[in-house]
Length: 192
Ligand code: 5GP
Ligand code: MG
Image 1 (cartoon, helix red, strand yellow):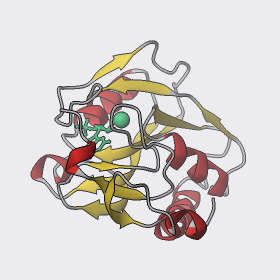
Image 2 (cartoon, protein in one colour):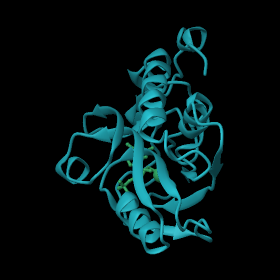
Image 3 (cartoon, protein in one colour):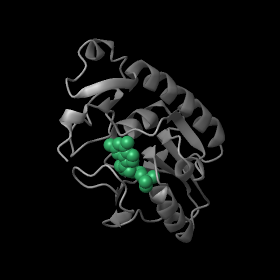
Image 4 (spheres, protein in one colour):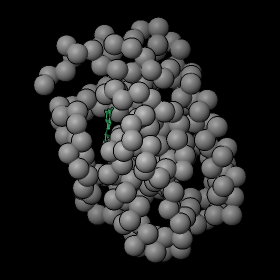
């Protein structure tokens, strides 16, 4: 984790507004990790963290390093919902193989943003069907819309307005994932 201040002196020219600065992300990640550490204190050795690629790459990397549990597994999964330059959800599907050997494990799904809820509903069911002891979800962002607020999710970093955001893992056409903050994209930076 970094405080990111130096980076945010130079906001990317395609970014309209910074919604969540990197320092706020870092503080919230630490708070979530403390909460998770307490809630999973019984799960040492039987915790499997499942980051949803590619959007949760940065969030998951920071979160697992901040977790007090040192004995956990990480199994990536890829779910496609948006593609390329689309900014509206087109339903979720798993790409490639799902994580294996989840029976008896406490599974923590880590995702970037909760929008339609399709991703979390799909993964939760798959992991429960595979015999997980329990399945919980942790998202960095949740949109203040009924579909997101109505989807069960145990840990939420920030509730945000219903805007298309990029940065800290979130992309537009695979760009902007490396920005250390979350922000909105200028209209003229969109290609569709
Ligand atoms: P859901 O399955 O809840 O509709 O959507 C989750 C996925 O949609 C996220 O993991 C993310 O990949 C994508 N998504 C939803 N809203 C946004 C957004 O505002 N910006 C970006 N970059 N991706 C989003
Ligand atoms: Mg995603």
